[in-house]
Every structure is written in C-alpha cells, then in structure tokens.
Length: 115
Image (cartoon, rainbow, N blue to C red):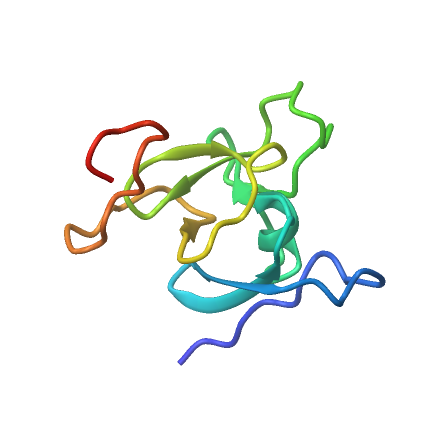
C-alpha cells in the first residue's frame, strides 16, 4: 500500500468548519466545507496535477481563474478549474489523467431533470 504524499499546503486557521469526504487518486480524503478543489487537493497531496507538456508537477499558478493552469479531472472524466470549483461531498478527484471507472456515478448537472 502506497503512502499518501506530504501535503503542499498546511491549514493554519479556520479549522472549525464541517468536514467534507472525497477521494483523491483513490485515497479517502477530507476537506472543509467551503474549500476550493485546489485547497482540498493541496492540503491532501503534494501536487494538483502534472503538466501535459513535460509531466512536471503543478500546484496552480494565479489562483484566481485566469491562467488555466489548475484544470483537474474527476474519475468520471469531468474537468474542473480547481481554483474556482468548490469541493463537494463524495467527489472523486484525480491529479493525473482521467481514467473513468464505469461503476462511479456521474455528478448531476445543475438543473438537470430527475436528479
């Protein structure tokens, strides 16, 4: 069993918020309600993703949605801008390329009927 990588970010304040359970690269992880996906991933791992050009680890760049450096995938293949999307209960996030298992439910699209 592989050990979880050392986190890139350490939480220093606001530790009293409710916890949110999610999966990062197949590992059960927790974040706090209101965290962005970027914060959730970097408080649980050493990188946000690997660049598609060189494979180098990335941790975001501008942190405000302008640079396009923080796109990550869910296990179902959905792409999210990690600095602008908020963590949700049960998310399955990947720091590498998406390889969507068929048994994971897709997340509903806002306003989608029947969900």
